[in-house]
Image (cartoon, rainbow, N blue to C red; front, top):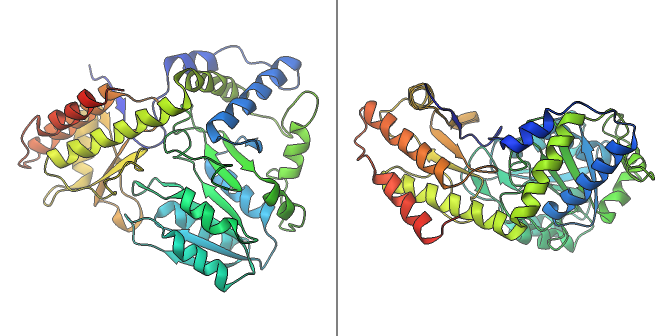
Length: 384
């Protein structure tokens, strides 16, 4: 028997309580029972987002919510700034291309963060920029951008700041209102601890002013329709929601509320510290920065002479631990260990143990326990 551990940065492990909640008999989405549940979910989402802004929900992946941000904020030919440091930053560029935007694309070396000062200077140089698109937690590389500094850089301009926080929401701290982030996109299958299929967008008053003048085509992803449905006496969605996922989310948000938002972020910081300490203890090289921002996923360079596919297959099929590989031009060069959401010290110890055993079996000179002991030392000092 092989007990399986999903250690990817999405989808992530799901608490049994959430699975049981989602498995309840389905209810109709146009009755009071569902409206009450949906209203509660929206209020609890605001606690995680740390915002008073309206939060819109869609039955889609996080990419659907990203697309909704483009079509609701922009008109054909609008000038936007995109700061990218990985695969998902590139997605803002791809969406801008599809919808005919005039985009200024600033690309940073993968594995390094966006420089807030560059954004501030770009906005000073071009007052016509309507929106700035940034990735908060870059899942492809393990980099977490400094959204507080970026928010300060954008706040003094007329542009709105849009953050893809799909893997960061609930794992890497984000204070939407305090940091002046106008639009924050997130998804269900990461730190929010439910399966893929739901996406969320918070929208500031500053951003709503752009929505009113946007002329890009939209139907399902129309924020105006969504806000109107949400503002009814019995809150609902404009179109059929993923009812069972929303029920599961209600339970997951309740668990987050019970843990406490500060404890939630502290747990993820410690998980990241322990994972990075373990990787260095094994003599491997980090691809992601070695700092406390990287609390969602740890990216690790594949050692010389080791084939990425064989390594991940062995950890999965023999030791039961599913790791993620690299994307884009770093495919085959890194592995990624996810730790956002339903994870604690046991998951990290198991993942590092599996990685050590697999590397040794493939002929890499690793001392068994060298990584595990370093992770244990972190947990011993800062038990989560």
